[in-house]
Image (cartoon, rainbow, N blue to C red; front, side, top):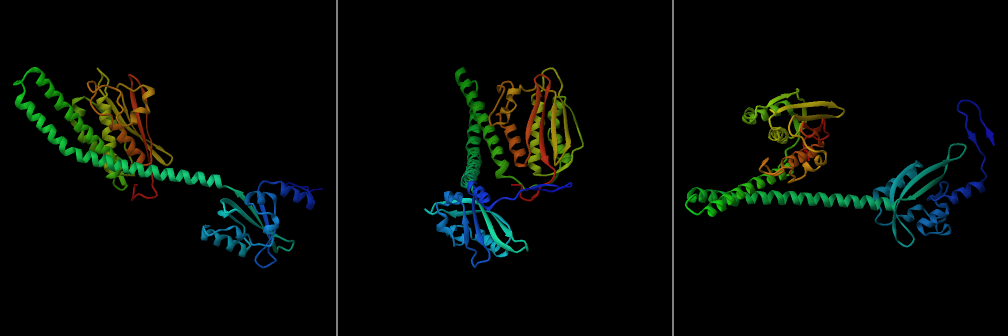
Length: 383
């Protein structure tokens, strides 16, 4: 044993060939060595882990080229990469599909390293093979599940859009005729008839609102527009103009920061801010004039926008639930609506690569936050 000195000192051992071979045989990583001095780079060594992995004994593979493990289904590009690395005597790391002696396919991480003599000439190639079949199978299953889920979501969106769109016209007709019946026969029939007519009109109108909400929900993706630079200050100005009567009627004090531009779908940004500000007005605290602030913070890679109010607030246990479809915390008599507005907001923010969440204190108010990336790799598609 020799010991070197100095700041870069290290410990070096002289290892016997028997000890080195014993270590190689004991490892659980499959190892083969090829001779670069002989044509076609024949295998001159394979350890026990290689036999355990492939089913081939050392005697069966000696003298063969390592390509014998590659079947017809192995990616031609992978085969070419290996061939080029062998010819060039260069290191290589690749995940490749091979076949065992019984024909069973398996995936392995192949690490190939050249061995040089004292003169710097490459004499051998050492190949390490690690079985990663379970990992690859899991990744393939995960990818298949992702594709199936994406396909299912797309079909569901298309169905929701089609159903909502096709229901609009018959519902319009039902509501119109029920209103006509109510106007023509109100007070001319008995009291029960008047009550039944009112229930029917109210139910049909509620269904009409519900169908419209579902149509809006489905359009977050089916009618989405490409991302373009959007001035959020202009979006807020448009929203405040649209809500000016509601703001005046409810004596709302609304303040805001100077908002930046972001790559986004302008129509959806308008819908998002309008829904959040409308909710802040709708859920005002009894006996207290609404105060709303629209702000933004400049975070690394994102802008985090928020809508803060002094309304009734929301209990912590409902902070996740409120973003689901048809999730209502109050009766329609207390607050109108179908529980779709925040679900639409959530889908819009998710489509833009952000996150919508809430902080709230019951009786004091709520703050709805949503993050938007400052930049996008592809601002055209917005998919």
